[in-house]
Length: 300
Image (cartoon, rainbow, N blue to C red; front, side):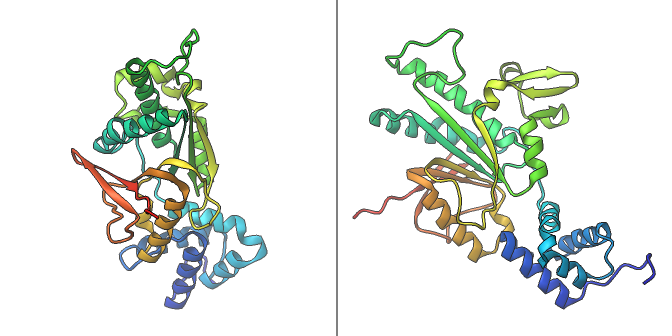
């Protein structure tokens, strides 16, 4: 074959590869997004020095193809993220949902909070949540004195509260960047001076997340297609991830999220996403253009 020729992706090969990707991670490529899939497949084919898409498909389903399948999935995820993204929703999270959660937890003398950021990309979302949590708990502590001596220097999360933020993604390379927690000036758009001062260290021309904030966040690899997902979460953020899935896969995912949440837990999805029409197990909470969904408890 002439090395300058680009192999043609036939309809049959496209269908095989679409089905394989769907089966592996639930991503659905409709007609609108097929050109993007074709472009990414061309790139991987070139990278693997193969001369047909069918031989690429054979590689992906072979025993030695796991690593390439993982590389393909990484190439298919668009890791667009930023600090303090969708401010109206984060305000709802901090001022309404969190306040409701802290009140219920205090009544039960349960001082542990667990939040899951699903599809965390390069880490801006979970770190944003950690900063907002630290602020909210300091403020809550001032309003509701708890009979615990606060150590000096004051910890980021006041006693007796314990906060765990689990952040997961299907893409290993973005997880490595997230764990690093170091961002360029360009990536810091949306982070005001006060937050930069309190939660970041300036290292050269970059901003590094402070150790105390990092310690609240635990990064892990997760494929939302599987059943083994983090349980007993008080809140789940899964923003701009469901749009990759078709309706059947979205319904399955929402059902899983319902099971992964504690009673009356909250779910936050992307600005252009909605749970309406997918489930009746969540009720919508709406404040000043911010939207969340609260788990509905079935009365026995």
